[in-house]
Length: 548
Image 1 (cartoon, rainbow, N blue to C red):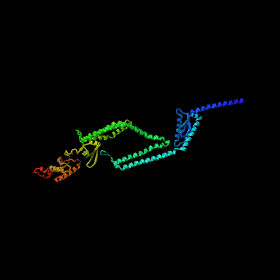
Image 2 (cartoon, helix red, strand yellow):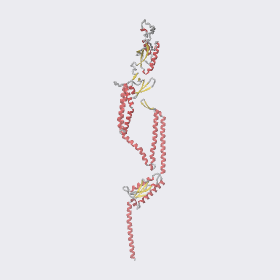
Image 3 (tube, rainbow, N blue to C red):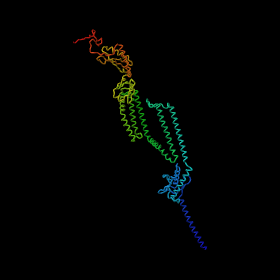
Image 4 (cartoon, rainbow, N blue to C red):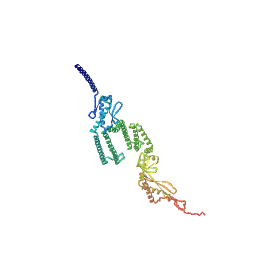
């Protein structure tokens, strides 16, 4: 009996030992597995939500855990989190936890489920609930939304204050400028040409100043928008877009300017060379104009127009040289616009070019100069202006008449001032009276010369003279000629001469009239002056004959 009991005890001990050995082996295997699959915590909010055990390809488990935590924090930073948009979506190789069908927070693989001796679906749904609960808890206890609204309100207040201060600065500057406008705005003049009056200059400056003010305010608001958008994660991506809209063109313009610098320096050198070349040429022509340099056949009054022609040609040549260095000069659009402008200029400026060429020809013909009293066609007056396109004449009635240079060139012009210098006798003006044959011509000569000598603004030397211009049927035409050096005052001289002729003839007892005669001469005294008649001359008698 004792032997049987001992045998049974031995059998149970062996079974217990085998059982213990088996459990010991299983524990060793489990410990070995646990060592190999170390879990890395997913802790987006300090506390661990769950662990990640397995690598995914070359993506280590540690980095995978950090990546999932960042995604959860990003979801928490959403201004308006929608918990129902967080779902489990199965795919071909994994089961994904997705937010709004576009943001994948994590993927649960078969290896993840084996590491925890659970199913893929269980792990995915568990993690979904954990993530959702953690985000809701953080939003309820540590919500960033009120703080962001506060930041937004503060930023709007700061922007408004900056806009207010900047606008006041511009307003004070404008007020100061207007108050001291006489000091800063004196007009824009080029030589004797008045380009802008002080009031017009002030008006243009204030317009430009207002444009700068509005542009500055808009720029402040625009640059504040990226800061404002960066407060809310949902609008954070617009920050880069807004900055890109400004920085990309600015960068492109800056790089374009940097690339243009070599060509710019070349253009500056070309302009400097032409500028100082023109200064040398202008000095030479100024010396010709002041008659310090004399060239045979080249008049001093040709100096300025010749210099203007040379300057125009040099500027045209300079533009041709500079053109290839201009940005975009080789583009098809630039060439097309250049051709269009050239054709438009050619078609629309034919008359202008004709007048410019005529003005150049007139300059070198030297038919008149400013201040001369001339006659072109039916227009008489003083030349007050000569330009490249027109000539302006002021009549004795103070009417300014503009004549195109092409018309001047194609018309006959009379210059009354050409021979009125000190070294010449002057302009010879004349008028005609008709007196009958009964008055001796010597008396008429004396009366006309006396009238001419009494006329103002005429020359006493050379002495006035009389010409008989015609012997007509009933009278003789006597022309009195007198010299003057005041051609611009011809109307007054003629008026004074006519007055003096009347006075002189009245004093000499000569009637200014032209007698007419009929065919009956019987009984009429001859019109031959008495000193030419014979001493026995008698007036013929009046005879009547009866033919019946």
